[in-house]
Amino acid sequence: MILDYETLKLVWWVLVGALLIGFAVTDGMDMGVGSLLPFVGRTDAERRVVINTVGPHWDGNQVWLITAGGAIFAAWPAVYAAAFSGFYMAMLLVLFALFFRPVGFDYRSKIGDARWRRAWDWGLFVGGAVPSVIFGVAFGNLLQGVPFHLDALLRPHYEGALLGALLPLLNPFALLAGVVSFAMLTMHGAVWLQLRTLDPVAGRARTAVQVMGAVTIAGFALAGVWLTLGIDGYRILSQPALDARPNPLAKEVTVAAGAWLDVYARLPAALLAPVTGFAGAALTMALSRRGRPGLAFVTSGLAIAGIVGTAGLSMFPFVMPSSTHPGSSLTLWDAASSHLTLTVMFWAVVLFLPLVLAYTVWCYARMWGKVTVEEIAAHGTTAY
Image (cartoon, rainbow, N blue to C red):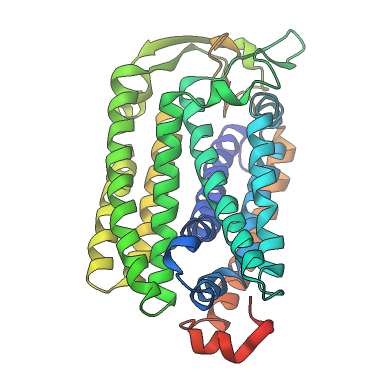
């Protein structure tokens, strides 16, 4: 079976979205646990319990981020090039924060000095909290548009100052999006801790679920109102056939109030995304209170999918709008790779993604169970 070019463009928009959601659900859980580490673990043994709930899995989960980046490079090379210009400093900040994770997980408990361990506890906090916020900030800036344009040869040119590029990204709406991202991932990590640990760590994690769940719902609602009333969206007035060879400059784009809501008017079923975001977070809080962390973990994942999906659907079909030259904005229709590239990648996904998912499930199943202080003491230095 050979899919036509238009269908493949849409399929890869869905696949990239699925990879980003997969990263948020899996590695977002690890980042949420890292953000909670200094607070839910009051003693060294308790903090080792927290670390060992994610220690065997974090590196595999982080592969989702690498895969998503590779997919964007292969499916939307123009987006990849423009994003690395506009978000270069933000990406470096995320990268430097992530450095704390492998070193912290592997070396934190190798030395018994309390100061050494406390330092790495806060390093793991940075490795979880900073990326959680910056990923949300990136989405917040995409919804406002990024200052870049394409020249006649379709080369992207970022119009901000490279070294000072981070500060403009930290605008009020983007910071709100960062708070939503941090809260939802921390809520997700807290549910995981409630599921995998015993009291008193599980009890503190349950409290964190309530706090972060409330912040997620309030922040998501405020962002929706702000996006509706205070931020102009992008709308395509004319463009070539959707199966045409990519040429981002061949379309006409306008900026208009309320344009980010167009998809919900055209396709009311898209409203399921924000509804899932709100309902998932609310159900997570309720199930956590009732001592059902297993189901709460599922609903927390649904909340993440709904919130990320809402951002993606609101922008549809835009992937990277330009705030200075709207006509240079990149969409899933005109930023895609060739038909052959998308086809080869599609079949690679069909063949290998089920194997990756099966292996991931097997790893979690083999290492399942409550992590306790007694278990950590029994394993000594072989535990994280």
